[in-house]
Length: 260
Length: 196
Image (cartoon, rainbow over all chains, first blue to last red):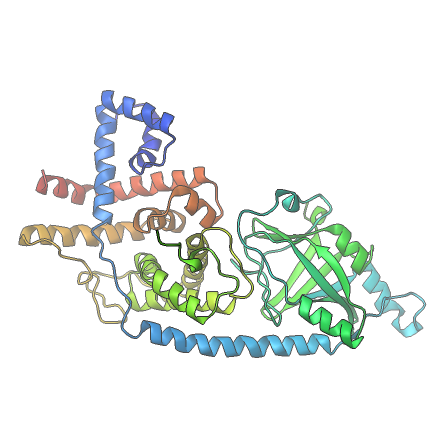
């Protein structure tokens, strides 16, 4: 190919697919009128699309939908059981006990360690996430102090809860209801997040002190951002790391600045 | 004027009837998306089922406001990537005579819409060559080409689906088509000669 206008060549496929801006399409069209090389290239590209269209379209087999619905029933039951077990384990934990240096001597090293690394387990239950691209831009602007969750899987970062929590590549902002808990086995503080219904139910029974917070979780480029203010106010200013436990694994949350 | 299908844009509080409607609406598109990536009907059906299962089990956690197909193919693409990883060691290059799990050979899957025997033969050859050429593309180029040419998604939708800039979609499409053209060189020439 002798044509030296590489920009036009790179636009030929988009031109064929009507994906260029009108002004650029006009420029490419004008170039094509005077360039035999590009016209030939365009024809070859058309040939590629023609060849691609010769591939057959397949139809689902007769049993596809029946198999799917069978699997749906099994999966729904499995998910329900897993969430119930996780929720029961977490809810059964004791109320939050803030680490204090005045605890018994035998426990001091543990709490020093806890305050140094402040490993906090956060289980998020019943948070609805709004997926899409129409989110409020201000909720997506993460400051340097924001907290970031490392991606755990290609798509889903977390999945837990009686009503389900999923975090995808998208962006979310939600009011959450929190129940402080403490796990004796791991000596970890964590915040259990509840659905509004669960929070109302606990308040009515007078079980534990339910916190209410407008937690903005912004998910961007595969990372979840949690406002640092929220972490500091609910988990303590010394907190340097949060571990989120869910039915599919553990996710670690670090201050944004720790990544830099 | 008909109102738009509710399942296409709202998914957060979907019931079983809506789920069934969604399956009917998207099963063929999704199946063909996978078929063009794995060339095996049974595997394509399994992956399609996997996507719908994921949608079903997460249905109370999502309320997409973006176009539903964007979300659907994002889940689909991730399922495909997972499948590639899972089967990395067991996958082999399929020959034209190799059978898929339902006993179909690659050559048998080629359509023959023409009444002229010679034309039909040429189409078969073209279809097989394009499949081989598609297999030679890098994964990220192949999925962009499949979403664009075969699923009819616009560059902007593909960008949202894959979480990449529109410019990257455009660049990947160009390189994919250019590579396919090089791979199909002889076949395209024969096609051009056949159809003038």
